[in-house]
Length: 143
Length: 136
Image (tube, rainbow over all chains, first blue to last red; front, side, top):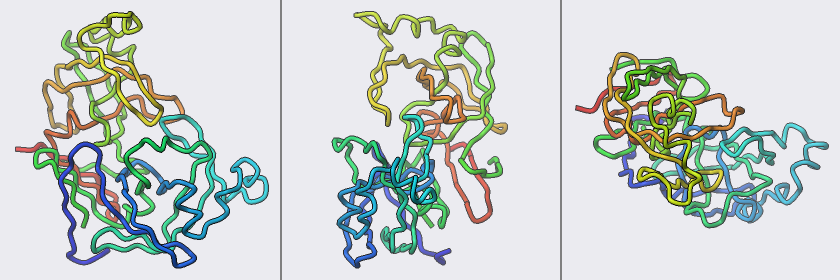
């Protein structure tokens, strides 16, 4: 846990924030993130993952699964069953909070680039915190 | 305030009462990303909203909506139910959308922003607890 630190932000439509992701090649990117505590892993686009040093995601998940089944999990989403490639992000930072070794996936069938976010911060990041959604105050706080 | 054990996914046992007083019970996923609460189309029909059967018409019912979801565009109807009970807390006049979720998801219903705007939800993964209270 992270002591008495607390981050509160207003919820207007989708819960979007800006986070900083550091990859295994020490490159970092600041990306628009969408908070979703029902997503088991974080989710990112392959082109961002490749920039951060995860060239594995350029493989096709169905073939990668034959070689490394633990690195190509099947996921269940509202779109159905999906194939993905699993990576471990070196560090993900959101405001004063930073978590190391966060699992993330790149889906074989990527979400539309028209979506207004670059990365989904799921439970592999959020389950280190206490998350409070206050519908009346229209705010989300992480502590 | 109600405290519920936090499992793999934040979910609650919800009892939904339609405007015709029929009742259905669901294990529902809590997701403030969803604009509306969600129940299956068949149950919306059972609650007296027969317009769910007519949404493929060129001119749809006045409460027809097109929602944007992870799976793309979804045509549906939006309606109010009589009440929703979650762990002894009652929420009245909550807006629901009729959507059939994929069976693999494991949930038939979703508690979305249309109910959560009247509530406060805390997810405490350290103590494996989900706290839900009615906003005063």
